[in-house]
Structure formats: structure tokens, C-alpha cells
Image 1 (tube, rainbow, N blue to C red):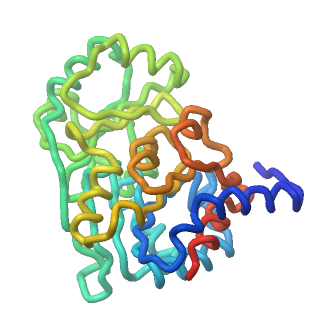
Image 2: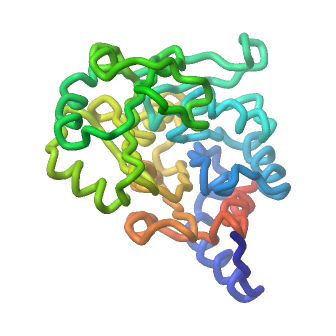
Length: 288
């Protein structure tokens, strides 16, 4: 998928971004960046310009990769970007790691937030009996019902039955119904009345569940407080509904050009799409 913009369109985007970001010039910032659709396209490719400005941003500011991906699926993105210092918020806020070349594997887990998914899974089984289920645990391993594997897990899931999954301590639960559209799936979830968890629905019939109160925003706020960065000196960029809390949390929330309207509506400003290097334009505006 490719799109094109005119020079005038690109300059208009730069002007919008400059208007919202100019007040941050010269400040040490905390920058939260979604991955899929923000740093890499939907084929998983990162442009050379994105690679360049991301490294520059990591040298000047505190860059936090903030993603729904598991730790195992996030680390390759960090490695591709060449980021050796900073942080990554994984599993929609349930796992936070600090990048450190001196640590084993180049990172250390500094925070995990887990929950008991049994009640929610029992509810979902009643309304979505054909769904696939997976549970991510704090050590990055996955267990899933028969036949459910996905690249976003970052590891091969161990096959388990649903009753076993209900008894596990989870940092994230994934529910996928291949035969439903996102709209149909959203209706099923709404009617099910799932309580006691945070959840977000993706681009397909894919549901991520986390502990109550946990999101990318909650993890970023914990980091902001730890690093004593002013709340006004925060920027977030994303394109999905699991980015909504992060975009509203940030001093300046930036939605990608291809984001759904509901995501754009909560952002302070909209940049170009991932295929037009919209995040590159944002990070260029934040250079010291």
C-alpha cells in the first residue's frame, strides 16, 4: 500500500505540527511511540528516514516504544531501530523494560502488572465459543488454545485448553474470532458485559485484555514520574484505539494520518500516514 502527497500537503502538515510542538523546543521530552502503523508499516518495514530520526530522538530525549506487542515481539523493533538506551512499554502497558547494554539481552524488566483472567474468559466463552484464546505471562511466555499462534506473540505459544488458561496469572489475554468483522466482534464484547479488566479491540476481530487500569498511558505515567519529567513535556504518537489513552495522556498527542476517525478525534494534531513517514515529520520537529 502506498499513498502520495503534494509538497503543499506536506508543508501544511509540518505547519500544523510546528504550531503544536514549537513550545517544546529545548526541553527534555518523554516521547511515547506506538509501533505498528507508527514506526513500521503494516508489512513490518521501517523506512530509512524513520530509522535515522528515531536514533536522533533517542539521543536527545527519553524515547519509549509503547506497543501492544509482547516483549518478545517488541525487542526486534528496538534492535532494528538501534536503540540501546530508553524504555519499552509492551503488552499495552502490562510490561515495562529498560534498555541497557550492560544487562543480559540488552534489557531488564522493571515493571509487570498481572491479573486473573478466569472470570472474563468464562464470560467470553459463553458468547464466543469458537474464539481462539492466548494468555501472556510475565516472563514473556504464551499459552494458547489449539492452533492459535501469531507473530505478535514473539514466541511459540504452548498449547493448553481454555480451562487451564483460566487459572493462569496473566499480563495480557488475547481473544481472536476469525469469522467476525471488527464491528461484529465489538458488538459481541459489548453484549457480553466483560468486567474487571481493561480491553481494546484492534483492526480485526482481535481483543487484548489487561489488568484494571492498565494501558500504555498508565505505564508511561509511571515512567514520567520516575524520571521526573514535566507532564507538559510529553509527546505520544499512535494510530490505533489502544493508543487513545496514550494520546489523551500526553502533553501533545499526535494521531497518524491513516488512524480511524475516533483516534484522530482525541489527538491534538494529525500527522501524515505511516506510508508518508508521518512520524518522521513529528520527530524532526522535536529536534533540539
